[in-house]
Length: 120
Image (cartoon, rainbow, N blue to C red; front, side, top):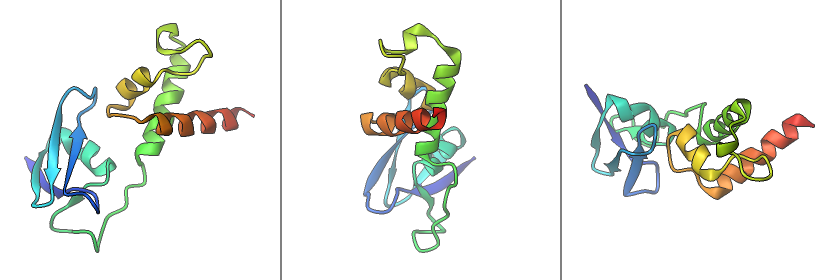
């Protein structure tokens, strides 16, 4: 079973990565049948059901920034030295693997700042 989605507003096509980041699909403006195993990632990335469209866009409470933050916390909780850099901060590679999608350096920096603020 799959659901037909369109990319986030402003995109003609949009890549969606499955957990682990090794497999992806491209969601197009004409509507793409998204398999069940990509559905959560697609919705979290901002894709919307084609029959809903942008005007009635459904907001997703648990967005990418929250996923990156949770990935950083999970890595810190494991305290695996191979997933941390020399300063004790999770590596970008580790955060990408934990989050299940291609995390940007800016997203990691923002999440890291929030984690540090929560410790004060």
